[in-house]
Image 1 (cartoon, helix red, strand yellow):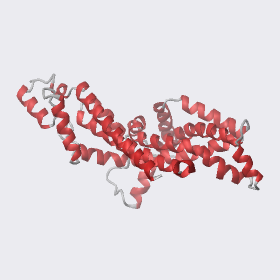
Image 2 (cartoon, helix red, strand yellow):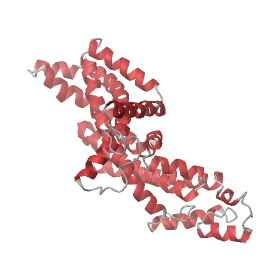
Image 3 (cartoon, helix red, strand yellow):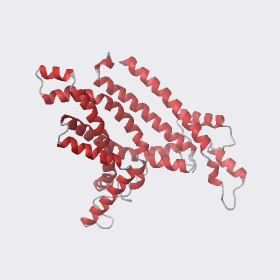
Image 4 (cartoon, one colour):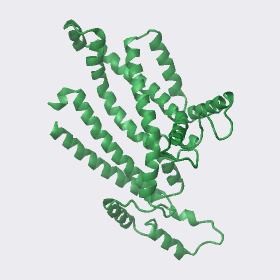
Amino acid sequence: MGAFLLRRLLYLVCLVVVSTSVAYVLAATQLNPRARYEGRNPPPPAAVVDATLDALNLNDKVPLATRFGRWSRGVVSGNLGRTIDNQSVNAEIGRRMWVSLRLVLIGSVLGTLLGVAAGAYSAVKQYQAADRILTVFSFVVLSIPAVVLGVLFKNAGIGLNNLLGFKGATKLLYTTGEMTPGMDPWSWAGIVNRAAHMVLPSLVLIVIAIAFYGRYQRNAMLDVLGSDFLRTARAKGLSRTRALITHGLRTALIPMATFFAYEFALLFVGATFTEKLFGWHGMGEYFVDSVTKNDVNSVAGVTLFVGVLVLMAGFLSDIAYAALDPRVRV
């Protein structure tokens, strides 16, 4: 098992290096940081623009290989460069990373657990009322774009606040921001306030995850319900519930473990609509804004961050796969 995990780790590291290098080359060739200074009145001197872009390693007049070499050396030393606004990319990612983590961790983990449980139960109750309800729920939710679902939850939160008589700054559910400005984030009132801000955007991710993983888990569970090993377990005296959980669900979770690990990593920049709608300044918003601003270093930094997350997710999924499937350990 150790040799297997080491090979997978080396493979994933190579993948991160290649994907990040390609992302930097694409960003440096397709984005135009010089456009930020065009159309100004009066126009800034060309020498000043070149000097500014040189200081940020964004000058398109410098050969691409030279710019990539400078950026790569900075990455090796732990410096991801400066944004087009002359801010530290490291500091920006460090700040926004925790914003996205708070949102994604609760939404995706809770949604996945509920989705797996609902999907497994739906498979066991195939064609019964619970199965049909989950099927309809999943198809309806998955057919609605995330941005529309976010707007629906946001409007529902506003309507609920009005219905219960919450006016002004104090609300039951908040529809904008991570917390009310001016509050101590670590006081009891601040923690409650953060939780109230987190409810609606988390619900969007939870509902989508339940619908998504519920369908996958249902199909995976149906594949193992008629397996010989389940009949053997029942013949040895195991109850139906214990056989389904110990042997059936464990086998059905093997493909889901890999799927969830990668999906969780990609959600850091994939919850863009949710962050935008609810005013959460996380990684998804940062990536979209960086592309809009033609900020090469920020785009490359976010790509590297996601690449490292995917590496970690892939490695953890391999460990989970080995834990669930004894054949991998052998």
